[in-house]
Length: 121
View 1 (cartoon, rainbow, N blue to C red):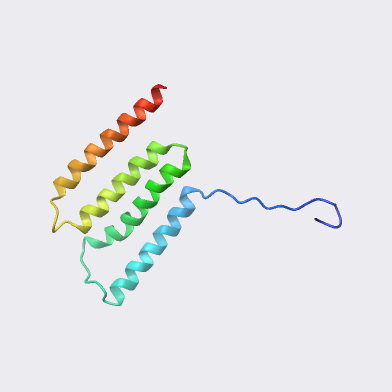
View 2: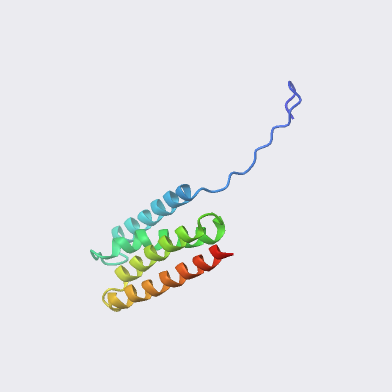
């Protein structure tokens, strides 16, 4: 309580905006990549840096789509796309990229169908 005015001073926790969390995730993932490559824990491959960026950011976006409640389909679609890009760039030598692209199209179609059904109610 403030002695002069008699007002109580309360701080309310602010909800985490997408952009703040995304910047934090981006910086952490780039930092981890720099440490991993600088310490020679993993060999550098030209396709792997996109995995470091899109993997954590895609997972964060997917989680945010379920927690945020607003515009969930937007975040769900983009999170799925980013995660698919990360998987394709990480496993390009093992998994055919067309398998990842086909799976992505199927998942996006299901997301669109669920969004359509939810919008009809």
